[in-house]
Image (cartoon, helix red, strand yellow):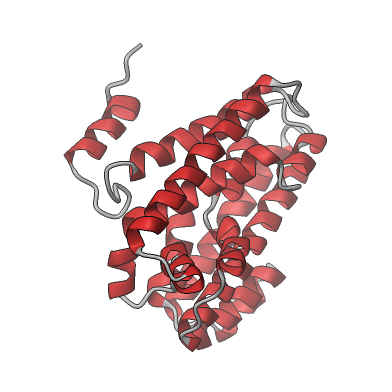
Length: 252
């Protein structure tokens, strides 16, 4: 579902279509589909059905409140996606500060972490959900890794298809430096983000370690996907073997 939302905003939806789509997700009401094109209606109905199913499953253990957090992070993400879509439509290249403010939401670490927490047991409390949506340092660091590694490996391909300016273009324009210099700077920021993650896991933590471990593992996944190229968009043998070794033929 996260991948489809990303594609709707990045590749398929026009600005005229994306505005009512964003508003529909904000309202979270089946009656909001009236002004959507057919492909968005199909997705929107499926999205509402999925959340309804999750809600019913969580009701068994009295954990329905968790759905609220899943909705809120999704709403934040689509608002950020729409901001990027407007930039692309207007041909606007934001400052790197403006870009990162929005891109750290669209990157997805917060929403993926929150979604992964929904089905956990009693270790996942309301206080833990409040923590994850409060921009804790470890989530921010994970998102920096995701966003910058993605930008480094995908920006050339995405610019060919008319994507919003990536952090690479924003940084080059703002500081008048070369592409290679931006790569070097972003790699340094990724290294610093890993140091932040290590630090957050070593000191006394606001939430139990199993929750932090999920964020660490999410960051590891992003490292595997983007380290040698865009293994998310262009899935080759290495990535297929990685997925197979985890999900199909795991070592037990």
